[in-house]
Picture 1 (cartoon, rainbow, N blue to C red):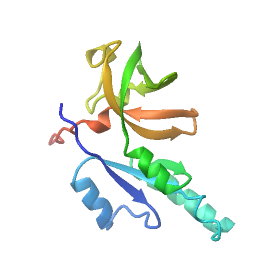
Picture 2: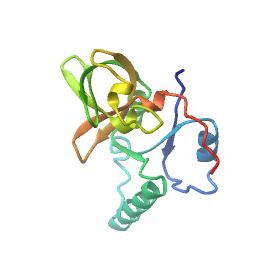
Picture 3: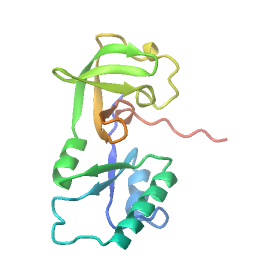
Picture 4: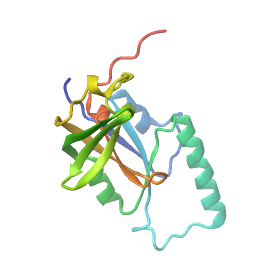
Length: 166
């Protein structure tokens, strides 16, 4: 399957879904990775008060739910984060599991490629898509604060199939 570019849509101050031309154009032009960056690096002079923090927290929870939990959060310097998000890695499959594959992200650094990130369609058996020793391209998609692990996706590099009419 051919590789497809992915659009990164960075929610900054405008957290609206409806009537958001930037988000609309991003989705219209292909697969979109919605992100929000907590910019600790460049906002030293502007410190949010407790009411602003409360509003942002609850707004981001609602936004993530509206996006079917597909909003990724990052903290740090946006320039470095965006550079890292645009990188593609060729990784080796080192272990097959029922719920995904372990890939060697960097020498000595293994990362889980979750079964939901292997292909756009539902994957019943990982072995139908990947074999031990295969080299596959993945996109770095961030750090999961719950599991404290890095996340990668093969699915985001693949052409998204057209939606079926119901």
